[in-house]
Image 1 (cartoon, one colour):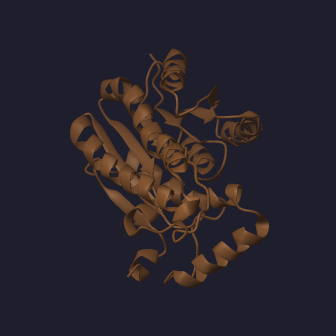
Image 2 (tube, rainbow, N blue to C red):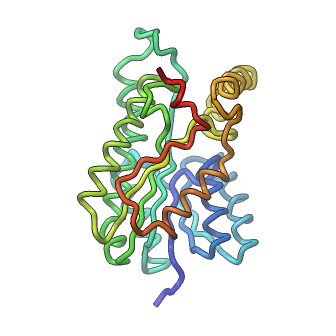
Length: 257
């Protein structure tokens, strides 16, 4: 029987997902990590090398969270390799930067695309993992949400709404899956090296970064490693926490009025 704890991480090639892979590897977890396309696959290979420095050899599998069969195949691959799943970190996400006041620029197709990855994709993965997480007896799901889901700001209205839905889904799943599985969410603000760095050009990214620095009471932005450390804490050391959405935004929510 496989005795090491096993964690599945979606969106593990970059940003918060990659930082979670490194953090959990450092804590001695076996890992199944996902890639979506060829560029992700190359980046994920580098993440795997970093994990191997901690004596962990991750399983790297293709995953499209917008497809039920792909989610099931990812989970099945992990179970065939390890025989168990103890934790799931839902990091896969997407966005496009669309000004909130420009309603004509945000069409229903973009809403559906964003929701299908950020909200429904998270549900698909949690549903696929649920039987194995229940069998673990101490299963944990951590959803990477966004402060935009709490204050209605962020890269687009669709993104903010999808993350608001993630927060509500976190509460509903926590009720539905307890007591065997705990479900919590982290709601970061701007994360250096996170999703914005992959969808903005360098000039616009620098502008958004500066605005976030000036807008937060702590005058800083978070690093992916900070979010990963909290995800690991929630998974390993917070047996009494479920249905919790934790803002991690350097105080941005204090200026949301």
